[in-house]
Image (cartoon, rainbow, N blue to C red; front, side, top):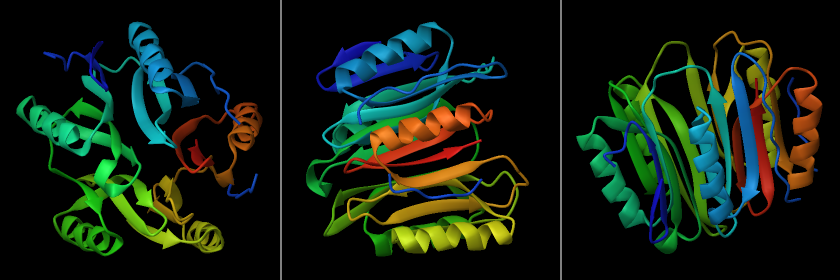
Length: 276
């Protein structure tokens, strides 16, 4: 780990360097279990997040999803699965610092796999996970809703599927940061700008069609974006509009049922998460 200014950097080998919604403060949800072991946390300050990253990297975990929200509070899910994947995680970046890190990643053969941002478009704070991997991908940030839809159409036409999405900005100026990766198979689609009620309706409607949410985010205006896949996974859960304590309760309840979070997202104190 090295820290330069606001940027906390951890790199492992990369360094040269079911269905429900609930309305439901800031604690930490953690757990570990076999095949694979996993850890999830949320509501951590930048300093506490950097400390946790150090610990988990030393223990052999790797991050699979990361989120920043609400004045730079961090959430993430990590797993220990014996993977030799080379990865790096950065936090506290400005848009320009993210661009520089993105360019550096390209030169080393790394791709962003989870990108999150918070704050107004002209002063947003970014956090990102990179993995060294091959294959086509596209990553864009600071997208207006209309531009987000247009880029998604362009990416899908090239055989790419939306694999990471987060909304930031303000209630009156929502922006998106997203990544499209090579489609590994299976039908997929996405929704965005949905109210809680509309998103809930989408969950049930798409479940009937064999789809489930695999990525979801909440925007500063309270609307939701989601990626839906028809992949045959039967055991999953999805909750939105949770307070931190509401998320903790769902975490504890679902842990008892053998499910763990695979994505956590938050904005304005409201959490959305997906479990498998």
